Image 1 (tube, one colour):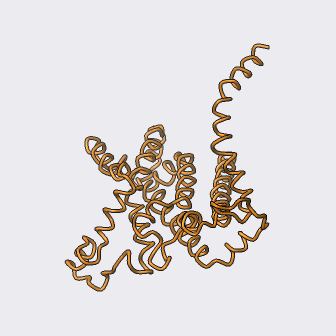
Image 2 (spheres, one colour; image 1 turned 60 degrees about the horizontal axis):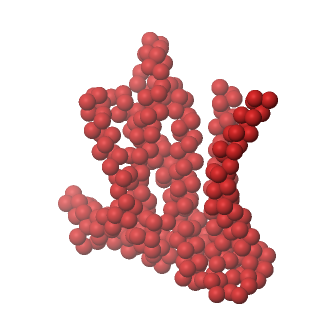
Image 3 (cartoon, helix red, strand yellow; image 1 turned 90 degrees about the vertical axis):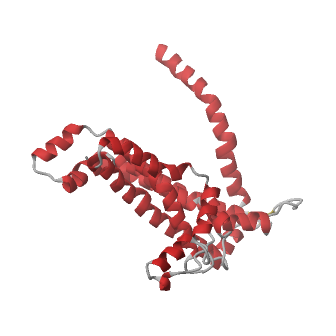
Length: 295
């Protein structure tokens, strides 16, 4: 009886949070999916049901596919740097850097993460400037003039320049999270590995990586979801240009919703983003649970 009352009290305490989630998260998701089957705009007296026409439009839209490819490229590069390189950086900080210097380096690496995305985008727009930008001047100073570009003004380099700025801003944040995870690993495991003759590299693969698996899973999910939800960086630096070469799903959704006023198509794009991010998160969680069971 007492345990039943405890559960009821717990549900009562959870009820406000559940109501807020239902009203501001789950209901908008369901409503967006419903509206993706209609043709409507801000001035439509009544949405017109069109079935899967909006999704057919996306399937035949070359800019939609270009945006999707840009998001995938964003996700792949982010996984390499924000997960892989961040883990290596965190391990180096904890194992090879003097304790007095660790705190200073953590702050230095973390500073970009607290800078506004808008400020970072404007800063890198100056760095990438073809006339007086720091990047082209450095390339010229070391004799690599052939590598100089109008980084945000060329179709072949615009999206990669934006991705580069994003990695600069995010890698320190994920590295600090990995540092926290590494600090929670019992030191006895490293001592046992050293007794068995394992060097630093072997300890990294045999102790560090397995013991930070949960943090790695979390950061993979957050990194991929962030790559498919990216918006501000592109809008600040290129607004999707030149010639839509740096469009991502978020900016293409924005353009169709608020500039072209095609809310039905924009809702379909939003649904695609939700399905991709939610599906990947579920897949990654399932893989993580299976690995824990196998261990």
